[in-house]
Every structure is written in structure tokens, then in C-alpha cells.
Image 1: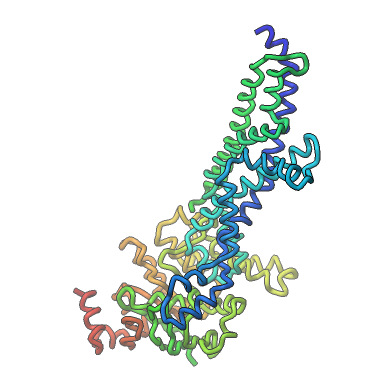
Image 2: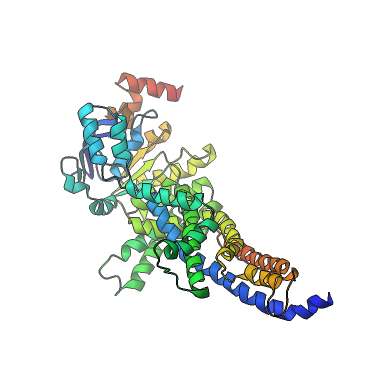
Length: 256
Length: 260
């Protein structure tokens, strides 16, 4: 116990620095993934079918729909490409994506685009996290947008509102209200997922705690700093939970 | 000249032809009720009038101006359709109020957005906004909702919500106000208050097209009744003619089922 008290000031200072990196990754990921997710969700809902006319011609000629004509009328390239990207990023471990995104350019192209040192590792981590989380967010957005009853859009149309006005003045807030609970879940997960960046030696809080096991600043073989990082995560998720609860209360004045 | 004239309107969904050539006209201040069994195309007709569906062919004119002509693709451009919609108002069966706005906010929203497109908006911003506000409050008290203007839709009963929706449609002063089964989603106790409001609008010579299953109400409110069957107008005439002395066999069957 006495030993721990002796080590505490050094350990806490180190953990704080690591935590700052964790916090930075969390905030940057949200800033990047929240809007990118919306763009991806629009992409996956795109109904642009440039070959539909071929299908329609075939149907007119044959007088009925065939498998081939259905393929052409239903072929939406943007939606298809976006859905494949989402599948890849949700279908493989984030840890693997971190490794590939960080090492692939240097090892395969011989061009380490991320730069060296901690800033390079952070940049690579941020890119991996933003893309990965945007893919998850996009599916939540899609559910939120499609969950707003069609009648809301029609009511706006009948009142002479433009598509943009309907989205921003009618649909958006109802969508936000719907997605707060599932988004909250993702945010809590993101708090803890930041620790995955440890795999490319990003100096976040787990890395900082682990350093005292191997030996750092005159302390070695100490396991408690690693265990103690749990306290940081608990406080962090606690604050995020409170913020989400506040947002949910803010939106409780209406029912959608 | 008729306010609304519909000529040979046709609409198909895939192979299913829902409207097989509908024609009728409506004089200013008159009310036409459209009755008929489910699936006869009543709702589709209203949705075509409000450009929520694009007819395959036919003509829709308001005050002599052709708003839609199936033969003229220029009349079907998106940007123009938005403006043309303003000739019509639509009250939905399921109200479709915007849940995040108060009763007053629902009535004002579209007017406020449209006002921004006016050329004199910047110069007379305050006056315009005040006028919209006054108009909306007036409409809501006309609906008997003067004490409910600051409540959100979920705090209102179904009948009150539908009356807000009527005020919202009236706020843009459409030439023709359409109702799509306005009381079908309401408890029997609440239908009365909505029907009373629609009757009072008829007395003020609001031009209306009403799709309804309330036969007694249709008889009272309408100057014309149109009976639709399988996508065609089976019978059209004054309420006395259609209800009192139906000529078409299908009309007779339909009305018997309702009175029986």
C-alpha cells in the first residue's frame, strides 16, 4: 500500500497524459464519423439506377418482367458500392483495420504516408476509427430516417415545402430523437474501443498503464496502474451516459 | 368557370389500373363528397390532385389553368409541381401533424418558409411574420382551439389534432381543400367535433373535396356526391339524387349496406 502511494504521483501523471490521447481519439472520431455516417447512409439509400431503362425496354418488348430485366431495373451502383464498404468495415475486426491502415502503405507501397512517431500513429488511428464508426452510424441513421413515417414527408410536400426544408425542418429532429439511444450505445462502445489503438502502439491510457509493468520512470513490475485505468474508463463512460440522458430529456418535449 | 376541373384522369400502379378515366368539375364554394368502397380509387384520386401521385394521363385544371396534362411532360416538372400543390390543401386520415412543433407552430411552419421566398421579405420581415402569426391564431380559434395553441400534438386528442391539421391546410388559403377520410382514425365520440368544423367551412363557401365513409355527413355537407366503383365514376349528382334515388345498381347495393 505504502509503495502504491509512493508510486501514485508518477503513475497518475502518466495515466493523465495517456487519457488525454484517449479523449482526443474519442472526440476526433465523433467529429468525423457523425457527418460521414450521414453521407454514407444517404449513399446506401440511393436509388439511382442508371441501367433501369434497359430493364424497362426489355419488359416492354417481352410484355413481362424477367430475371434479367429485374436485374437492370434494380441495379443501383452507388447503393451497392456503399453497402459493400459498410459490410467490409463492419465485418472485420477494428483491430485488424488499424493494423492494415497503419502498416499497409509503408510495407506494400513503400510509402509510409502516416509519418513517424506518435502523431503518425494518431492520424492512422483516427482514420481507421472514423471510417469504422461512420459505417456503424450510417446504419443507425438509415433506420432513423426510414423510421419517420412517410406521412410526415407527404404532409410537408402538400404544404409546398422543398425536399431540403422537409429534411431539415420536419424529418431531422424526429430522426435525432429516434437514434439517441442506439447512438448512445455506440458512443459508450467507442470510449472503450479507443484502447484498440494500443495495437499500433498509440500512447493512450492502456499503453500508459502497461508501461509500468515493463518498466518506466523507475517503476517496473507494477500491475496496479494497468488495473487503475479502469477507473478512468468508468468516469468517462459515466460522464457520457449523463450527457446522453440530458440529450434524451431535452428531446422528450415531443413524441415521434 | 369551374374552380376545379378533372378530365379523364387515369392512374395505374404496375398492371393494376386504379383510376380508369375520372372526370368531374367543382364550382367555387361547392363541396363534393366522394364515396365508395375501399379500393375503389378514392384516396388515389385525392393523392393525384395533390401531386403525391403522378397520373398516367388526363387533365387537372384549377381556375381554368391547366396544372397537369398527361400529354404535356413540361407540366410534370418537380420544381413546378411544388408551386402547383399550393392550389390544393390536403387533410390526411392520420393527421400527420409535425410532432416537434406546437399547434401554432404546425400552422405557421409552411407559411413562414414560403414567406422567405417573397421578394419583399427582408424589407417587411416583421410585418410578414406578425401577419402569419395573427392569421394562424385566428384559424386555430376558428377551429375552437384558442386555448390549445401552445400544446404539442401528443398533448391533444385525435379530434383536436385533426382540427389543427385543418387549420394548417387552411393557412395557405388553397383554392380547393381536400379531406381523405378525415374521421376514419377517430373514436366515434370525436368524429362529431371534426365534422362540425367541416360543416362550418362549407357554410363559409370553402371549396372542398371530401372522401368519406360518413354517409349522413356527406348528405348534409355536399352540393354534389360522387360514387366511385372500381376506378370509375358510377354515379354523380346532388345528395338527394344519389342517396334518395340511386340509379346505378352498385350504388344501391353500397348504400343499402351502409343504411342496413
